[in-house]
Length: 285
Ligand SMILES: CC(C)(COP(=O)(O)OP(=O)(O)OC[C@H]1O[C@@H](n2cnc3c(N)ncnc32)[C@H](O)[C@@H]1OP(=O)(O)O)[C@@H](O)C(=O)NCCC(=O)NCCS
Image (tube, rainbow, N blue to C red):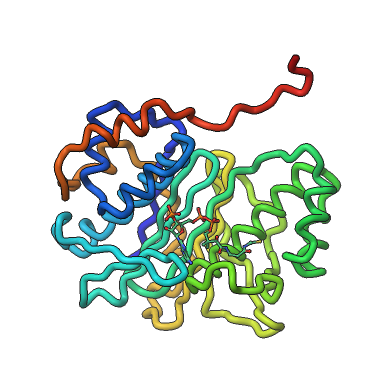
């Protein structure tokens, strides 16, 4: 079973009681981490990530919310400390407007989301990133003459690489230029899912890794899954190709219950923050 959820954290303007309740529903060390963000958008993105993880564990594994104990690996990847659920894999990502989660009961998953944002100078941007992609990936990026389309392919390849690295949990230590992706579908269309991209690492093909590519609300989302130990009935692209479900705040909190007491300071820390950095006007006085 594969779960794919998304939540629009940019559209969410938490009330005092909502934010305080969210703070009560996550572990203290995560609450402390969230308080250290400078901007509201980042605090909300991370908060939603924690709540999505707790929700999927409570829903799928039927572990009472209060008993869920999450840890992090040395490289920062969250995992479930409760014993007996080693086959359950989950991962979250946040960028743009969305926090997304992918979880599976059969095989390792990683997920990455990127909003298609236009950079002022595409050539300069590509130049800085030249070493992250292989020769054949640059050919794919430049297949379209349209700069926006090139940028979309760039973000798509970025998400593919990140989703794989995130499934492995290796973090920044992994040289991602060793990984190469080949497209069968050159351009992703909005609201479609593609599962025909293949991967090589150091030139070796790994057919057990399946990459589900989604284009949703101007975001690219990739779910990487290792299907090596999956039963044949699940090992079909059709079986996994369901879209991400956009959750509401009440969906997110459906089975949430507090782990700690109400904390007024958690709201007082959040409320005065700016939503996001101010974008400087080019000709501002
Ligand atoms: C750690 C890393 C995987 C996070 O990726 P990111 O794009 O910054 O952030 P995302 O929003 O996708 O994911 C963040 C979430 O992934 C999870 N995460 C953290 N470390 C992780 C790891 N080592 N592996 C998998 N998941 C991890 C956490 O849930 C985290 O949420 P949090 O920050 O709120 O705790 C990333 O920093 C990294 O190391 N990247 C790989 C190397 C690289 O150069 N990539 C470029 C691609 S072209």
